[in-house]
Length: 227
Image (cartoon, rainbow, N blue to C red; front, side, top):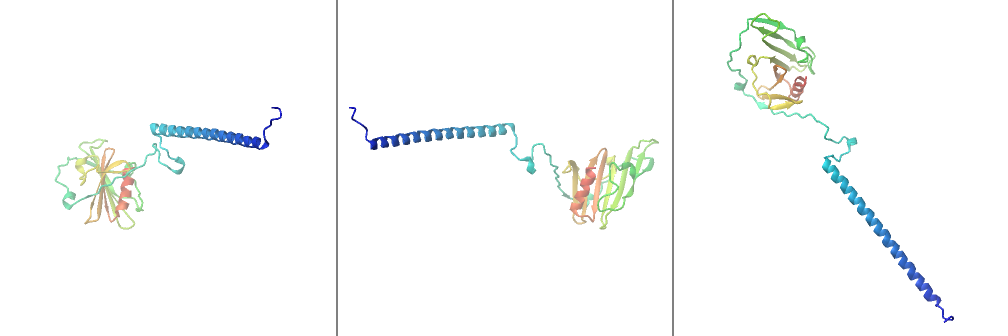
């Protein structure tokens, strides 16, 4: 028995078999570990997405100007109505009779209306009248009317009052929105005239534009209504 030995060829074959089996076992362990790690990453990413959806957080990059829930964008909604001659004709109305009238300076109302606007180099021309039934520092009603002249020959007429019976408005206020302010807008296509009306404090304001483009009129209406 002491003389029996293993041939060198058998020893080498056995060594190679053991090396191959060890290499396959290491590869299986490595692949199994990578699969477990990948599964863990997928679960983590899914959990993060689910949490964002539950919290309502928009997955946008604010560095590129993306919209977020805290942003507010001004929205204008203009619905021009077509005004006929009949609609523009004031009906017969009985206005109150005031015995006392006095003129007021336009400068007293600069917080309501701008004295200069784009395209009109000069201050408006017009007047403001206070009406009273008895001597008093506080008038019963105020009406005003003044006209801007544009450099291209157009005109913008502004009429206002704190007594609606003293000013005829040919359209309903509230059919459109400019800079968050409810307005009414209309046009007389035959005459090329645009109308805009809104309320500011206790005043009702009517703008009438002649010889002015629609886009220019919208900008002027936005300027007045948002003042």
